[in-house]
Structure formats: C-alpha cells, structure tokens
Image (cartoon, rainbow, N blue to C red; front, side):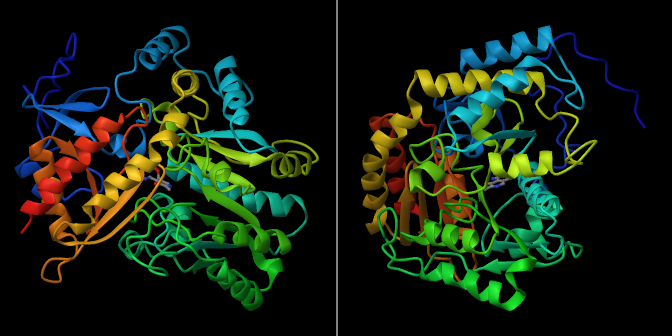
Length: 450
Ligand code: PMP
C-alpha cells in the first residue's frame, strides 16, 4: 500500500500530470489495448471535444447518445452548481424536495397522454430493471399472481443489470452470467427483413409481431407480464422497425393484458424529432424508460414513466404501507433534478426536437450518399440516427469498423462502432453544414480503409 495522495487544492481538469491509467477498470473496454494508446478528452463545448493533446474532435455521437443539447451548456452547469450549493443531497424515501417533483411534472408534460407518473433512477440499466419490476408489481396488485414471464427481443439492449441483461438479446453480454431472470423469451429482431439501404422505416406490416401471438399460445397469456422493446434498437447498430410493427405489438399486448414497455433511453428526448418514439410512431406503451438525454448527460439520471393506470393500480393496490418495494438512494437527486429541469428547458426554448425533425431529411440524404463507398453493405436511418454497416474484413467481425473508429478519431471525428456497424447520433443542435462535415469526413475515412 502507498500513502494516500494529498488532496489537490483545486483539480486541474485539463492536465495529464500525475494521471495513472492502472486503477480505473474501464467499462466495455479492451483495457490492455486502450491503456497502450489512451484516447482522453479533457474538455467539451457545443459540438466538439478537446483531447488531452489539444485536438478538436467533432462529436457525431452526442457522447454516448446523451448530449442532445450539445456540450458545455451554461444553463445546465449553472443549475447544477446552484443545486449542489443549495441542497447537496436529500433523501426521497418518505421525504422529498421540490426539484424532484418539478422535474417529474416537466417530464410528464412531454409524455404521451395518460403517461404522467415518473419514477427516478440513475441510469438506463436501472430504468430497465425498474420498469420490469413495476410490471410485475402491477400484475401482483391486480391479483394476477401467475404473470411473471418477461419478453424481450434479439439484439435488444436494456443495460447490464440482471433484469435488463435477461431481456436483452446480445449474446456477448449474457453468456458469462449464468444467473438470469427466469421465464424470459425473445422475439426476433426486426432487421434484415427488407431491402438493405432502406431510407427511414422499412415498408412492411406487423407480421413479425405475430411471433408474440405464438409465445402467448405457447405459455398462456395469463403467464406473461410484459414485453420490452427499444422502438429503434440503438446499441446493436440502429435497427429501425418496419411500418406497423410497434402498433401490432401494442394491439397484441393489449388484447392479452400484457404490459408494453418502450425502452427510450436512446430515442427519448428528441432523437427522432419528437419528445418520445411513442409520439413519433403514434403508439402509446404502458411504461417508458429513459435516461441519457434527460440531463443532457451531465449528471447520471434516468426516469421511468408509467401510465396512470399502472401507477394507480400499484399505489392503490396495496392497502397499507409501502406500495412498491423499490428505489435508489439517489432517485430524484437534487443535483440531477436541477440538471434535468435546465435540460428540458433548453430543449423547449431552443426548439431542439423541432431542429432534429427539420434536419432529418438532410441527415437521411447525407447518410445514404455513403452507399457507394467501399465496404458499405447497408445504410439505415431515422430521425437523427444512422447506422452504416461495413463488410467484415477476412471474416473478423468488428475489425474494419474499429479501424474506421481509430482513423476517424485521429482525423477529428467521434463515431461509435458496434460490430461492423458505425452508429451516428449527433447532438440535436447540429446544423446542416455540420451534418455535411460529418459525412464528408466519413467518406474520406471509408475510402482509405483497408
Ligand atoms: N437501454 C438502452 C436502449 C440503451 O441504449 C442503454 C445504453 N446505451 C441502456 C438501456 C443502458 O443505459 P446505462 O448505460 O445508462 O445503464
């Protein structure tokens, strides 16, 4: 053991002096590889990051799909500072503070009609597990004691906690962790059903959703609690649903008394040009999970929005005492709530959802212009999201896209890759010219790829 380092009087945020890479075990990272050649950010403003070696990097991923209003927004940082100075922490178990109630009302205001009860978490993973437990609590409160099955989807991502992992459909995330929630099934994902290079939503119908009827027939509707899907799957490479699919899921779940959960951790807060994908697609689920854009990524926070029916059933279904044995020390944390209030204020005042909607056609055209680049085998898009799929190199999945990621970073462009898919999701305050810059840079990078 070493003596503890002296506490710095003030932290020099941009300095690499004394930074030791060994101790931080990085998430979802090849730690050994990364630490040989670390890529570090020391500052961010608007559409750009500044790297430790002083370069500007254009952010085509809104951080990790979260910085929807752009970086370094004074309205948010001021609110965070003031909240930390005024009320650093307050419990929300049997106590409360005004900021959490205010934010819940602000969130409720932009949700689909009837969805206005808000439960706070600290992340997308916690939101997923909260939503699943909420669904189980709902059926239990109704006296439906046999509804415990949960249905997710292949290539679905609902975070890394045990519930979300279990309904998620990414083999690599699941395989090593044997103990999962019991009674989970998966629907097929929605990609590959129609032509590649489809612009926006694939034409189609709800046929794929009929798989849900098969599971209902197999297990009996009285055993199924909830179906959870990302309206547009993000983390596994931008999978846009066929037209009619989400509505068909809604119809089937409603018919059988099954709750429908939309995981809107990525699609929530303007990514598709509306407050929610539910609004964009005109399909109202029973529960919506969010995180990321809720606080513009500044302070960790998520929110689960329940329909009044789900909320009232749980809350009134318990004759006395606590109704929902669930929550987090930091649920509705004052500093995060302040960040959320300021963030939603920015979205409103600057019309950022509307900006995303207005630029979606330009974004689509710019993304699909890459269709003739070498190695590109698919381009897909919706709102301000795009996925560009590359052919695997020598049968090794991910190698080519990872090369693109490194080349882009060196050229001053931040992209995200998953397998051989490049996923793009810029801050919503982007301009048409910046969209052209992103795809222009990407074209050069793709042209240079081995
Ligand atoms: N759900 C979805 C749809 C996500 O995209 C993510 C994160 N990318 C999560 C859940 C998990 O969120 P977090 O990393 O905040 O736990």
